[in-house]
Image 1: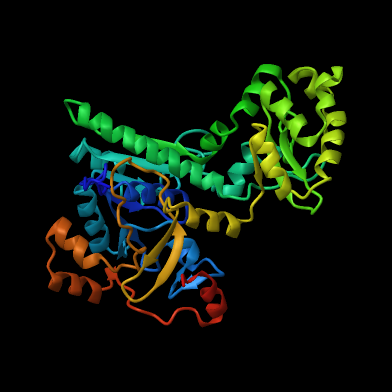
Image 2 (image 1 turned 90 degrees about the horizontal axis):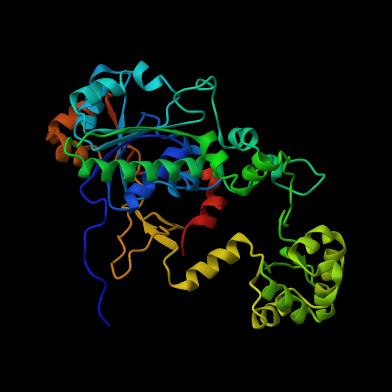
Length: 426
């Protein structure tokens, strides 16, 4: 069997200055780093605030931070000092892309004005991720994941009917914005390469806009029919046989019988084939109209066996089906799949952690060897040498003057020793 081809990653050679913190921006730049870009994470002397999120820590860094910052380098700079700000400006001058998630106007206020940089280098791509965008009446309001889930309508359709709204179990407000920003950056890089002027673009990604885009058919229904979508729980507004059920053991499974063939297969597997000829359920429209009666019959049938015992007969009848897995169960399945989606990372000082890997595969090509997320400021010497030809002595002097900060070693968080043990890979 031929070994995977050794070929540069798609974004190899592109330099990214990452001025982001917490989740939306770092998730964006991790995508770019996974695709081969050289990402330099510029941090304040205290570091990205996500480094300190409890409860789990490896050495001095939180598991939260470690999950979204692999394949990057860290330079910690005090931009309140003129020397520090000048250093960051010089790094931006060597970059292809800048990604920041300050509130609108903050970058310019601290001395990082987009227009000035692009006047000097029109090829620079500048991507801003913010809660509500660079324009509009809400531009200056702070935003977090749950804020945009609430304002977008996403929370209003999440949860069980006639119950209070709940947030999604994943931070989609942040992560979807990070994904859209990464898509836009890749598009801008392609456009720059094709353009005779090699001009970059300024990208404005709003977390709220991204959540609205994720409403999918629910927004279309509201716009077309004037309806107000409600929480569906584990059901579907249009397809009554696309939902979860409970087996005799109390465990849940989902079926997605969304075609006539699958509907008949569902009835065959459950031993209720007589429902196929029932006028109440003759068509998809009739099944939707009479969904409560249909659900009562299907729920009763599912209670005759354990959830796991339904998998084989449903699959044999062409009905897509799955047990609802816990997160640890899903991760164990991923380990066994051979697709590298549970990724072990090893740090330079003996740190170990497993994280969820890069879902993008290039067929026939070797995977990039992932690097452990950087400790605060640990790459200052390498980055400043390679990007700016700053000598080791000069870097040492900048550290002495407090312009640069580096975190060396550390005994971790003793109060989190038990939590640390849970997340260190065996």
